[in-house]
Image (tube, rainbow, N blue to C red):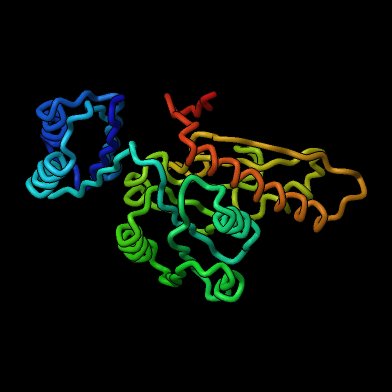
Length: 280
């Protein structure tokens, strides 16, 4: 069996970075399975999925990649995909229906991973999840760049492999998203790309929608445009009130997000050309 390693490189764009890191992989007898790179306003991000035989020494590879990162003034993160369980961080604002579903599953040990930390943006979340006994941090910083600096420190502290956005009402920047390619799962309260934004249910109600749904997707630098993992929907009856629609929608959000997280943790998902394929 091959060992798969994911390597993420981010920093200010400069010449020679791609060649240096790919050559390092070849030097260590690795084979590049996937590679993707982006540049936005001079900020560079690269994701490499590489395979190695069983004899690969991760400490040596890690040391060499870190040296390259220092040489090119870049940051590098290495994920060993061969590990079984994954560490999970949940990001949330105020609503708790989605986070409760994930934390309930965590307590019942039905996740192939562990919720290591919850990070919120509003203090009201403290009393809502205190019974779950999971480390909680509140980041109220309004400047998203500064907020993400704190997020990244917490993610490194808890060695996070998967980030779940359980109704996290902030827009993540490329600097953050590129560090976790296909490792951030979001739940959106509509069948994307319709009714974007936080008031999706109100838009659907006002426009007399006959069917409404939810979408769990991987997060990319393009808002609400990431690869779709799973979707579900329900019909709206003529006598349904706005609150009835919202309650039905939130139940479906919780269910769908949990399904997507389970699929990811069970290694049932692969992304090719921005499309998610579910493995049998």
